[in-house]
Length: 226
Ligand SMILES: *Cc1c(COP(=O)(O)O)cnc(C)c1O
Image 1 (cartoon, helix red, strand yellow):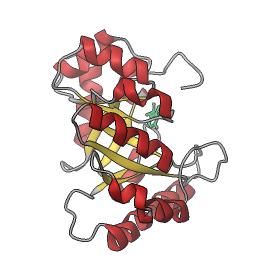
Image 2 (cartoon, rainbow, N blue to C red):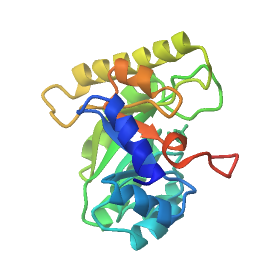
Image 3 (cartoon, protein in one colour):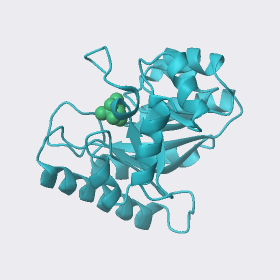
């Protein structure tokens, strides 16, 4: 068995069956993604619009491409034909753009609202008040080509596991509040995207449904800014 296949199997062995693994393949070559694909992996996460486009056009069409990083409105057009789930909606403006491009492609694109849950300043994301304003807006309510199916967040990059756990609990609370206030009876609103290589065990204990794992599968990345 290849090393990538072994790592995927090992992670899957540690998580409950209902938790899905997003293999974060940003910066990784097609050959490594193919290796993971051959090991049965179908969901891959990328954070550059043009990289998704390039990879999607050169890999099997039954791969589910997830966009996981900060997304600029002017790049949405590149991913709209391919992307299965966008984890990183952090403004009404971005959601409007996704809706517009989804419509052009005659698709409905699933999206997660990204929340700022870390104590660090640098991470993108909404706060609960901004999310409430977005969901209450007339603009959002008119959108027909997007579907919000849950929330996403990144915990602080720290060895303080108690802090990380608190941040994941906070995200789950946000999820539950939104579910109660806006998505009652909506069976599609059920995703809690949290947990990366360093903290996915805690995330799973706190109710994650989608873990996003890069370096523990593919090894360390070359580019520092990824
Ligand atoms: C890169 C990235 C990951 C994966 O990080 P690893 O620590 O390599 O597992 C997960 N989520 C987001 C949003 C990322 O940008």
